[in-house]
Amino acid sequence: MGIKFGGIESGGTKFVCAIGSGPDDLTEVKIIPTGKPDETISEVIEFFDPFNSNDSLEAIGISSFGPLDLDHDSATHGYIKATPHRETAKKDWVEIDLLGPIKRAINVPITLDTDVNGAAIGEHRWGAGNGYDNLIYITVGTGVGGGAIVNGRIAHGLIHPEMGHMRVPHDWKADPFPGRCPFHGDCVQGLANAPAIEERWGARCDELPDDHPAWDLEAYYLSLMVSNLVFSLSPEILILGGGVMQRNQLITKIQANVSKFLGGYVQSDRVINNIDSFVVLPGLGSMSGVLGGIAMAQDLVRD
Image 1 (cartoon, rainbow, N blue to C red):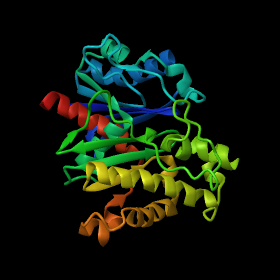
Image 2: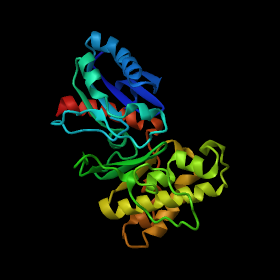
Image 3: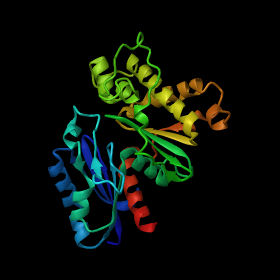
């Protein structure tokens, strides 16, 4: 069957595991509901075991929710740390070793990065970001986060970028909702993630009609975040994915707001005349993260 690469995207509701070499070559894909850490990780290992046993698996890349310990010199390298989603399935995953058990069970090189970094890498390799050396991928779902590719390489640093915890103007009169981030209250994540929408309006995202005021408010907060990122990192393209962004009119509202919020300061044709090709949806759809894992696995053995 030839040499293949493994990708894992771990999230609060599901793990997506895949074998292949790119979007046009996915031999097998499996979705595993996120449960208790031991049980879920065991199912992930079980998925890859046949490929590991017949020596057809070359490497695995993991794109995971975080925050993560990515310091190779740390005693807790590969652990999921203090997640802000304590009320979800993720509450069981605080201080959990994600990387270690998989590395011990599967005898191939394995690498780990954040889910948004993985999605940024996937979109850069095969999706909407292909051909650009500077891009940002933002996810809006249970959490809000972002990953950046700068000069062709994924950005790391002290830990890893936490764009979703950016502070933005909060008009308390127009929106008295206090936010629901347990660390920062009304950061972007606390104001604009899916649980915040549900708590503020008393209904799930998929229950709110297209003309509900929730979407103008959501677009406002996300547009402030995007505008700040344009000023600070100057990406060539911004890609917005995640479950909340599946609401069709949201991307159009964000594009219009970003044009207004940038105030004519960024003198680029991509902003002035082609905002709909500058702020875009993912080219890989919901597969950005797991395909990013496969791209990370390929880079791991090629570097």
